[in-house]
Each structure stands twice: as structure tokens, then as C-alpha cells.
Amino acid sequence: MSILKVILLAVVQGLAELLPVSSSAHVVVAGKLMHLNMSSPEMTLLLVMLHTGTMFAVIVYFWKQWKRTYFSSADAFKRFAIRVIWATLLTGIIGLAIKKLVEKIMFQGASKAEIELLFDRLDLIAPALLAAGIVILIAGLTEKSRMAAQKNVYGDSVTMRQAGWIGAIQGICLPFRGFSRSGATISTGMLAGASKERAERFSFALAVILTPAVVGREALRLIKASHEATGAPIDLHASVVTSLLGAVFAFLAGLIALRWLSSWLEQGRWYLFGIYCIVASIAVFALYHAGY
Image (cartoon, rainbow, N blue to C red):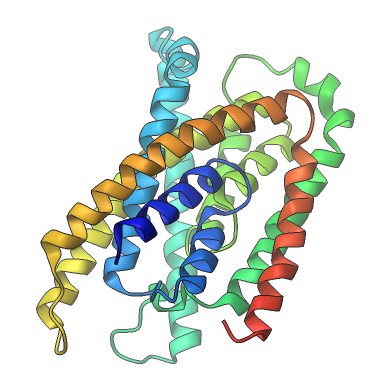
């Protein structure tokens, strides 16, 4: 793959990952238009490393807020740790269960069946985008009616109930391309009664915790594929170097996207992301019927 294509994918990933519009959907569509195999081990590793780049952008952008909110005292950190463990546990249980169910249904018990083989299916990405758009739209349009209740919530963190809902929805998003993780989890937090700021902080903290495990899994998947390759050999060194380059550009684009996201959250424009996702789902359906 050319360096230019890697940079283009990284910029698309960085901008879309931290906006609630599904980075994976945008990257897959961009890859399709560039005639790339988005379900290959090399590509899934690249996508995960692009996520890693945006993860570091999240850490840089939110660190002062997290330090002030979650690390201000031993009690604050304890409350955060309990909630994040609870949410991550639900994400793992639900995400793994859905992954196994989808693989069993879609591949009907075929050997070496992996959900990643479905990642370039635009007919699956489009409805996921639509579902995410509807959730975001509902959360945005009902935002004002929840403002008074949110002001009375104690503390700066989400509640156990809100953390549970966010973790559960993240588990549902995890196996699917097109179901915006940040859009769905922040919207879920808002619908569960958390302020936009609390939902945003907690949602991205969960993403940072989850990313290393996903990176490790995809690295192992690539190594396994290189040993099993029967055709052209997989160049592990080139794949890693390319992925690291992409992560750098995704990091820079991610910082820009976070400033945009926070600005729109403060201005009450969350619902516009929902409208965008719904329009994008229609565009993806059109591309699918056009043969992509």
C-alpha cells in the first residue's frame, strides 16, 4: 500500500474516530474507493493502529480533565475505577457473545471464520450507521428536557447505572463496523441521565482502556496469518512500519476532531451528528448497490 493511501486513511480515521460518526464506516468506504481489501489481517492491524493514534490524542486532550475529575483524591479514583471495571466487564461479556453469535450465524460453523471478514460489507455497515444515527438524534433532541435533572447529580463521574449502560452499549458496538462507539456510548450516557461532559469523559476513558487489548489481538491475528499464508507472504515489518506511520497522522487528526466535538457538545449541536449518520447510511447503501 502506498504511503499516500495510508495518510489518507489515517486522516479519515483521526477525524471520524473522535466524532460520533463511525470512523470504521468512513475508513472502510474510503478503502473501498481505493480498492483495498479492508478485511485482510494487514488492514485490520492498520485500522487498529490508527485507533491507537487517536487513543493517544484522547489521552493528551482529556488528561487535565481526567486528572481533575478522576484523580483528584483516593475516593474519586476509587469511584472511577469501580465504574470503569464494571463497564469494561459488560463490554467484554456482551461484545464476545455477539461476536461468537454473528460468526456462528454468518459463517454457519465454517473453520477459520472471523467477524473481521465481514468488515468490508457495506450492506452491514449502512444499517449500523442508521441505528447509531437514530440513537444520537434521540439523545440530542431530548437533551433540553434532561438539563434540570442532570444539574442535581452528585459528583463529577457517571453513576454505576450509567456506567453499566455505557459499557453494555459499547459491547454491542464493538463487533460492528458502522455502529459509532463514541456516538452510541455518549448518547446512551445522556439518555441515562448523565451530562454530556460526564458521558464524553467516561466514554473516551473506556476507549483508552479497551484499545491496548484490541491492538494485541490484531497483532496476534496478523502473526498467525503470516504463518498460515499459502500465497504471497505477509511482510510483517512493512505492515508494522506502515501502521505506525498511520498512527502518527491519526493522532494529529484526532486532536483536531476532539476540539470540534467538544465545541459542538457545548453548543447543543449533538443531534446534528445523528442527522449526518442517517444521511451517511443512505450514501453507503447507494455505494453498495453501485457495486462497491
